[in-house]
Length: 305
Length: 314
Image (cartoon, rainbow over all chains, first blue to last red):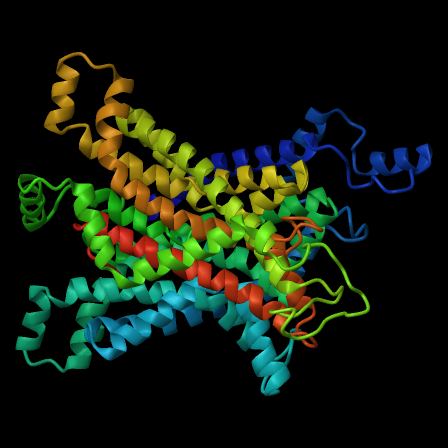
C-alpha cells in the first residue's frame, strides 16, 4: 500500500509539469497584459514595472524562472495586490474555502446518504418517491439560484440567519446548504441504487438469519457495499465543490480563494490565476489519491497495485 | 462540474448484456419484427415524466425560436421612468431597474442558453466520440495511455481552465461554446471507448473485418451505430450540464456580455437586486430550473428506454 501511494505521488510531478506549462503559455500568449490601462503609462514607469516582474525577459527565461519558483513552492507576487505574494493570498483564503467545502460535502453525505438509504429500503413506497423527487429537483436547481432564494427567505425574510459574511458558525449554514444540495441529491441517487443492489444479496439474508438487529444489518453489513459508488463519486464531487464555491463565495461575500480567483481573472492578474489553478490541481490530485486508498480499504476485492 | 462521472464508470463494465433475461427480450423483439429503436420509443412513450419533460422542452425551444415574433417588447427597450415594477397585465413577469420587460428578456435569454447548450454539446460530442473510439479500437498501450490522460484530466478543476480560456480569448459566445465543449468530453470518451472495446470482438465486426473492411469503415459502419444508445443518452444528459455551466459563467460575468442576456446573466442581475425586486431572480431561476428538470427527466427516460440492462437509478 505504501509503495502504491509513493508511486502515485511520484506520478504527480509530470502531471503538474504539464498543467503549469500549459497554463503558463496560455496566459502569456494572450493579447493584453495586466498593466494595460486606459491611459498609457509613461515609458519609463512601464519599463520599471516590467523589470520588477521580469516581464522584459524573453519568454523562455520567464518560463524557466516560473518553473523553478513553483518547484520551490513560490507562486510569485500578485500583480493586482502589489504588496502581497500569491502564497500569502492563498493562505489567507484557503482555510475559509476548506471549511466551506468540507461543510458542504458533509451536508451532501449526511443528507444524501440518509435519504438514499431510506429510499432504498422502502423501494417504491411514498418515502422513496418523495426523496427521489426532491433529489431530481436538487440536481436541477443551480446553486446561484438556490443561494439568493435561501438568503431571501431565511436571512432577509425570517431573519434567522445572517445574510452574508464570515465569522460564526451561523454564517456557515446557508452557504453550505447552497453548495451541498446538488451533491446531496446526487449522493442520494447513488446510495439508493447501491442499497437496492446490495440488499437482495445472500450475505444480507444470512445476517438477518443470524438474528441481528435490523439496524446492524443495514449499517454494518449493507452500507459499506452500498456506498462504494458514492466513494467513487467523491473525487469528481470535490473538484466540483471547489468550483462551485467560487459562485457561493461571491454570493455570500465569503473571503475565500474563489472570490479572489474571479477578481483576478477579471483583472488579468496572471500570477494569481495561475497560482490558484496550480494549487487546486495539487489539492485535487491528493484528494483523488485519498479517495482511491479509501476505496481499496472499503472494497477488499480491489487490488491496489 | 462533471457530476455525471460515475455513470461512465458504471457503464464501462456493463456494456455486455449481463443478465440473460434482457438478451432474450431483445431477440424476441427482433423476431416480432420491431427494431430496437422502435422498442425504445415505445418504452419512452410510456414514461410519463419523460414525456412531460419533452413537452416542456418543446414549448421552451419553440418560444425561444419564435422570440422576435411573440415577445411583447423589443428586448433592449428601456423605460427609465417606469423602472422596476412587479408583474402587471402589460408586463407579465415585471420589469427590471431600466424598465425592460422581464418576459421579453427571458424569451431572448432562452435563445442564448439553448444555443450554448446545444452547440457546446456538439463540440463535446465530437471530441469525446473521436477520442473514445480511437482509444477503444487501437487498444493496448495506446488505449492505456489515452485513458490515463482522461483519468488525470478528471481530477482537475476544469472550470478554472474554462475561466482562464474565457479571460484569454475574450468573452464572446463562440469561445464559450468551444471552452465548455472542450471540458465536457471526458465521460463521453469513456463511454464510447468501453462500447468499442466490447463491440469490436463481436462476430459481426469480425466478419466484416474478415472480408477486408478498413479500420475506419469498421468503426463508422459497424461499431459506432451499435453504440448509439449510450451515446444518445449521455448527450441528453450533457445538455443540462453545459447549460448550467454557461449560466454559472454568465453569473460570474465571464460569459455572455450585455446587452445580450442569457438566463445566467439575468439571474446574476436578479441576485444583485433581489432585496428590493425579488421577481428578478425568481423568474429566470424558475425558467432555468424547469428546463434542467425537463432535460433530466428526458435523459433518465431515454436511459431507461435505450439501456434496459442498466437498472434505473431514479
